[in-house]
Image (cartoon, rainbow, N blue to C red):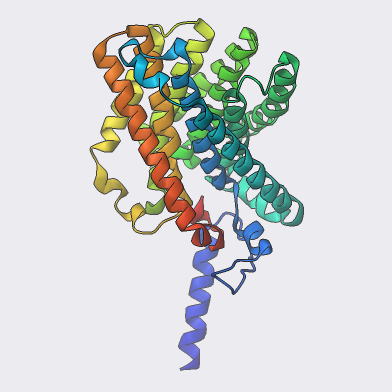
Length: 373
């Protein structure tokens, strides 16, 4: 009886090493109901910043709907009734959550640098290293006017946030076409679009300062690599790293990328022109394609995990693009579409916020693995 048990242990060990690019040994707290601070730092990873991306995107949506310049004319009275205090409260909550997660992840970098290094070498985890900077850029754009009264303070913050994004671009994009083991055809997955979204969000924030050249540069990097990533993901080449079933909500990143590209080009061009409309219609088609296949997400919805937040911010970006489209077209159908998509985005966000609060213990007490990205 002893010999079969030892063989079983060996099999489990080898399967773990096979599926992980760089295995990490973890020490998990035995108290599952009240996880210690140490266990939270161990279990948390960059993918948790998708919560902040959802919060920042939602704050930007509320800000956009509250401004008279971006309100669809047929629903002007409805949008003006949105209380400004609710938007400020949401932005403050976003700031508190983002600061808290940033501090926890900074402690992880200090005390568990090997785990951060493992994230960088993981084909999914490396893409979420863009998430903290995207979250801060969204928070910067959605900031109330009284926060950045001085233009130069906004510029300084933008530079602090965009330099890491460009640095990651050079590293990740360079690996895609120079390193044999990191070819895009081998590591491509829906989360690869996060690097592209980081460029589009940075471009959108740069135009707010009037920096058209910087915004155009970032938009060019994002659009070029988006076309390559989009085609690669559509081809589904054999041998590439596929996602486990619980991570299927990240397929909604297909909706987020063209939506954010449309908003970035609108800020550069000054109007929601034909190029923006083409990108918006693409994102709308991709959303309809995913929404018509609910069984695709059945397995991922069996057990709650942080991947559920991948539903929220893509819908928010789509609602922002729909609002900009309605403001340009000025027709009832476009305005109604903006209202419907905004309502869906808000409802999904509220559900995830409430459910995550109720499941806060399980959210931060599970051990980190490549399935949790």
